[in-house]
Length: 217
Image 1: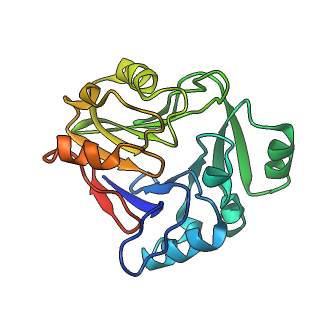
Image 2 (image 1 turned 120 degrees about the horizontal axis):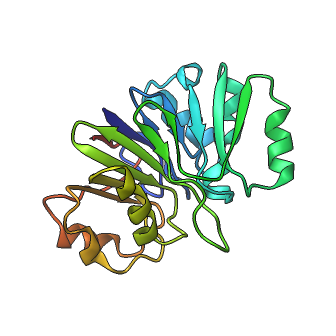
């Protein structure tokens, strides 16, 4: 199974960068977050030859602009399940509910959203956020938005579902790099502050993230 980076602060040649994050879990047709704006997201999807009509599920990590800015992608989708933390604003929920093709799911606790794919449920206090957990033959890969609840807390929650193989996404405020020494795939993206240090510390297991990057999980 592969994960394609559709939106990130950095971009490979031919793609567009932007402040935010979005990726596609291929094989499951799950879009995780939508980046900071729709036009950049659509541009990168076209470059990747990703058809929005093939997206079956959208999972939004938290209600910050750099993760929900491209949510109008729902207008390009066919019938689509959208999973949001229950703490999202009533205005956002109402807006989504206006779309006849959207099936809205409000997430509170950890749950399976489709075979082999789980949400951590809402984690954190001041900024509530959900992360995605994808099970493959290698183990579990955790996909994060910004990790506002704390990356260690997210990993602790995910580990209840099995052994963690990979970690992809934004690691905002994360400093205890030694915690990741047993993880076999590390892809720091978006808001990760110690990205270069992390890549240098784990050269065999970490990969540089940018729009256009595809990683096997």
